[in-house]
Image 1 (cartoon, helix red, strand yellow):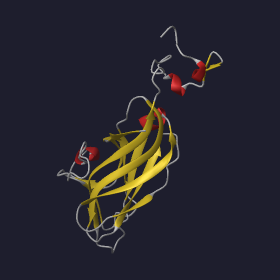
Image 2: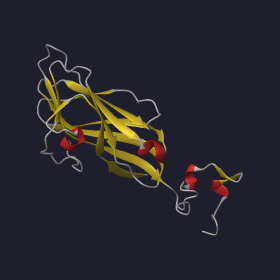
Image 3: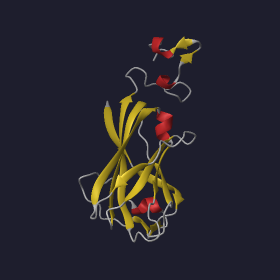
Image 4: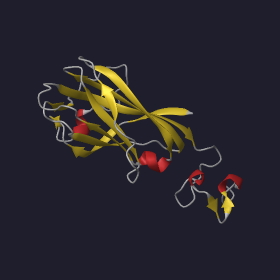
Length: 189
C-alpha cells in the first residue's frame, strides 16, 4: 500500500467566517503535521450551528483502490468543544457520515479516518465538509487553520499503465469481451 496526501484546492460551500474570499486559500495547503501552520483561518462562532464549509481536493495519479482517508485538521476551540467533519468520495456518492472532532483549547492537530473501497474516479471527485457545532449560548469559537487528507491506496499494477481510450485498464472490466486481467499487452504495448 502507498500513502500520499491531497489538499483543499477549491470552495464548494462557504458558510463559515473567513478573511479570505476563497476559504480554501485561508487553509494552509501543503502543511503536514506536526508542523504548525501560521495562516489565516476559517472559523465558526457562537450561533453558527450547522453552518457548513465544503472543499474540493487535489487528487493522485494511478490509483487502483483507495482503502483509507485520514483527514488531518489543525484547529482550536475556545471551550474545548468540537466540530464535525465528513467525506464524500465522488460527486454522485453518498457522504460517509459526520465524525466528531473533539478540539482542546489551544491549537493542535486532530484526525478522523474513513475506511472503504474507492476508485480513481472517486478520489478525483473527493470533497470534505466541516459542520459547525456552535449553538447560541455556547460562547465558543472553532478555528481551522489547515487540513489535508492522508490517502492509503494501491497503485495500478505495473504493465497495466497504458490507457485504453483514456482509461486505465485496471478500471476496465473487459476489452472486447476479454477480462483485462488476461490481457498482457494492448496493441503490442
